[in-house]
Length: 151
Image (cartoon, one colour):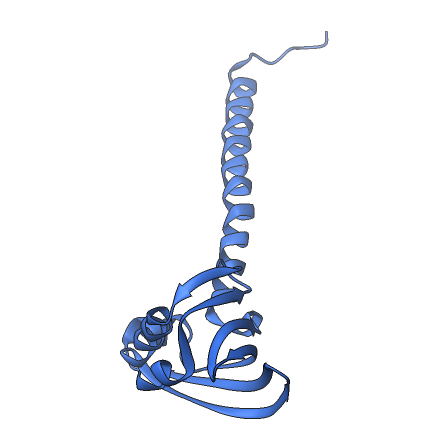
């Protein structure tokens, strides 16, 4: 957590693929995010490459997470997510961050898939039940009508 104080300005602008788009945040937000994962598992990372020009630094790295809590183990277990971060520095502190994760490989993508599956299957299942009920009623009605003779 002390690294956040060393690296981030008291406030910074976050650009994220999620809901955090162009939002001004306090550095405490980075601590909350890190604390959430540190309390639930072990995190490590490895840098693939890093480039810098002027006040910008881009880092392509791999985030590794091994959960310790049962519910995170069930939801996806061990995670490895490729991430590209671009940081803008001013006076030696991060004042802007662009965060690009490859979430398609994460548990989050599994939730999106299941949600989409349910959105499609639930109406189809309801319609199948309605059609089955009408089909059964039609068979019963046909069985109750007397047979018509052709003589």
